[in-house]
Length: 153
Image 1 (cartoon, one colour):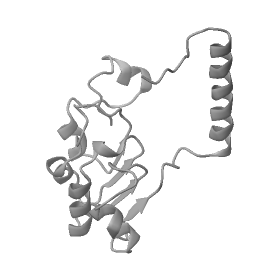
Image 2 (image 1 turned 180 degrees about the horizontal axis):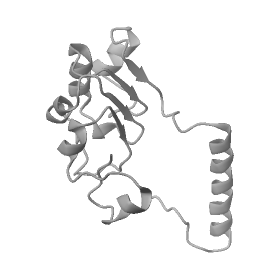
Image 3 (image 1 turned 90 degrees about the horizontal axis):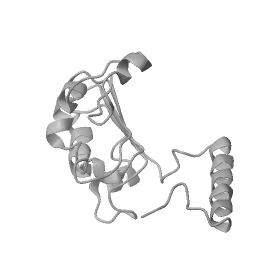
């Protein structure tokens, strides 16, 4: 099951998956929530306390997208109170974290159901090679006077 209001209709048929019509619909039947979206005004704190309450208590949340998509205080409270089984978080709202209950709880072993990683979820030997290859291709484009394929604006 997945939810994305910007993906054209019919994509679920092509991928043989089940599309739901709203984020609440997705969350209510979700055993594992893996977040893969960009950060913008619409997605900032998209996963907040009301959203987390919709997840079943056995659910697991994974965020490898952008930190501010999840309200970290709400996530901390859900993990602490048993409203959520576990979370694996590769990105935090503010890095390095300062006055962050989620980070402090992880650091002091307060939450055994939380895994924090420092932006390394992407890493493998293959992805490191791919990163170098793409960087070399971008440098080549610039040297030839071509526009970059992935400009950062």
